[in-house]
Amino acid sequence: MDLGLKGKKVIVTGATKGICRSLVEILAAEGCDIAFCARSQDDVDATAEALKSYGTKIIGGTANVKDGEGYQKWLTDAAEELGGCDIFVPGVSAGGGMEGEKSWYKAFEIDLMGCVRGFDALFPVFKENGNVSVIFISTTAAVETFIAPMAYNALKASLITYAKQLSQAHAKRGIRVNVVSPGPILIEGGSWDQIRQSDEPFFNSILAQQPSGRMGEADEVARCIAFLASDASSWVTGVNLVVDGGFTKRVQF
Image 1 (cartoon, rainbow, N blue to C red):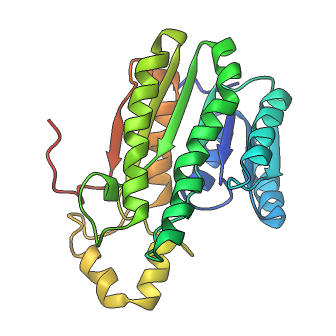
Image 2: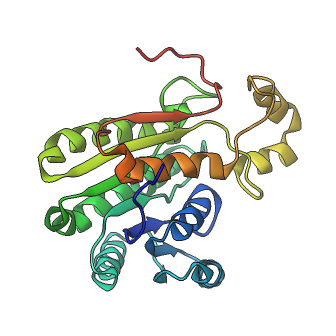
């Protein structure tokens, strides 16, 4: 099946590691022009160098999502340099944490407002395009209780509602908005890798709940994002796609 991604102009944030790193690799291989950002210049340079081998336009930059004005300027500059934006994936996350109000402010500024500000900054570009796919990244911790009450779970849940609202408001403009919610994904250096090293009994207790006996991999989530980003999913909007290998026990009617 041809996903129709060749020539698409893509902006991805937080794309030097994890799921979004796999995503930009997939999209570059499909022929997309890509602008991406992260906080570390060294990581940006290494990722840009790797992606250039696919022969598409690659723009790497540094941006801090917590700096609302600077972040939005980077996005609008990236869209101008690309010549538009067909696909937007704001992938930066503060991650979990139980540090009281500090965790709530971090999750609000990064996980929630990173998506809100990103959509708002690029909305004028989206309106001109008329065929746009926006994908937010949530988590299975947003769709059922997980571990303990924490900011990350609650703020990621808010993205699902916000995406649905956006999808209803802007479908007539040709703007699709969807969410992908991964279950536990094992990424070298990522949160579950750190947990495996610091709290092996807890890690093993989560691993034991995986029906397949393993955790997911970054590219398994990234491929689902690529599908939702593509014209192959042109009739899909307002959906929260759970990508968890059967980890959650909820039934979605």
